[in-house]
Length: 360
Image 1 (cartoon, rainbow, N blue to C red):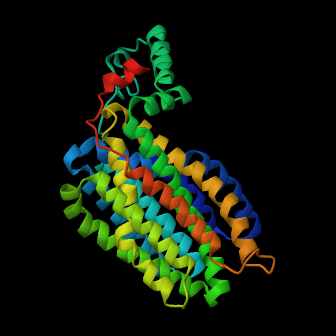
Image 2: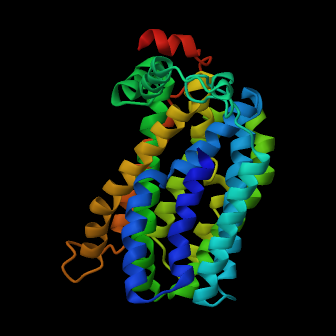
Image 3: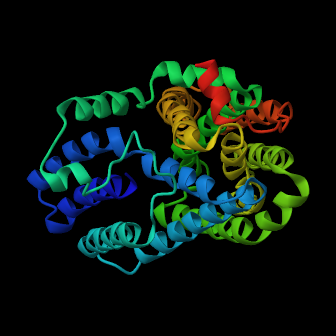
C-alpha cells in the first residue's frame, strides 16, 4: 500500500519536472488536489504503523523519534539543496528521490502483517488448475470491504481507551498551534523585523538541524527514562514557551533564539504516536495512526481560518490595540491547552485486538 501512495506522489512532481509552462502547472494543480485526497498524510501514518508492527513496545518511542529525526534531516537537506539547484533541477531531483524511495520500499520492506482477508497469494492452487470459484471470490471481496475503516470504527477506537481519547485531543490542539504558527510567522516577522525569505529559510534550517539532533540523539536516551507521557508534556511546554517568545520578540535575534527550542518541543509528535500505538492491537495500527493523522488534517484546515485573519488584523492599522504578535500569542494558548491535557494522560496497558472487536 505504501509504495502505491509514493507512486501517486511521484506522478505529481514529475509533471513540473517535465515542464513548468502554464498548462502543465494547471495540470499539476488539479492532479495534486486529487492525489492529496488519498496521499496527504497517508505515507507518514503508514510508515508509523509499519514501525509499530516491527518494534517492541518498550523501544517504540525511541523508534518514532528516530523516524522523525530522519524526516527532519531530509527537510534540512532539501531546504539547503534548493540554494544550489535551479528551479527546474529541483523538481527533477525531487522526482528522482521519490522514485528511489518507491523502489527501495518495494525491494527491501516486506509486509509486516499478512492478513488473509486483505491479501491472497499471487499464484494460488485454484488458478494453477484453471478452476475459479466465483462464490469464494465474492466472499473475499465482501470481507475486504468489511475490513475498510469507517466512522463507526473511529468511534470504537475513541471509546476503547481514555488514553487514546486524550491523545487525540492533544494531537488536535498541538497541530492547530503548529499550523497556526507556520501560517502567521512569516508575515509577522516580515512586518515586525523586515525578514525576507532567506532569513525565514535560515530559521527553518536552524529548527530542522536542532530537531534532527534532538530526535536522533536525545530522545532515544530520554524516552526509556522518562516515558512517553512525561516527554510529551515537556515537548508541549517548550512548544508553548517558544511560541510566546516569538509573540513578544523585541529584537531581530529573538526569533533565532526561539528556533533553538526545537531541541525540546520536537518530542511531542513522536510521543503522541507512541502512546497511541500502545493503545491498540497489532491489527489496528494503521487505523489508529490514520485517525490521528485525520485529526491533524482537520486542524490543518481549521487553523488558518482562525489565525490568518487574526494575524492580518493585528498587523494592520485597524488593530484594536498595539500588539503585532497577538495572534502568535493565541497560537501559544492553543499549545497550552494541549500541554494541560497531556498532564492528564496516564500510560495504561495496551488493549488487545480482541477487546476492540468486542467493543465494536
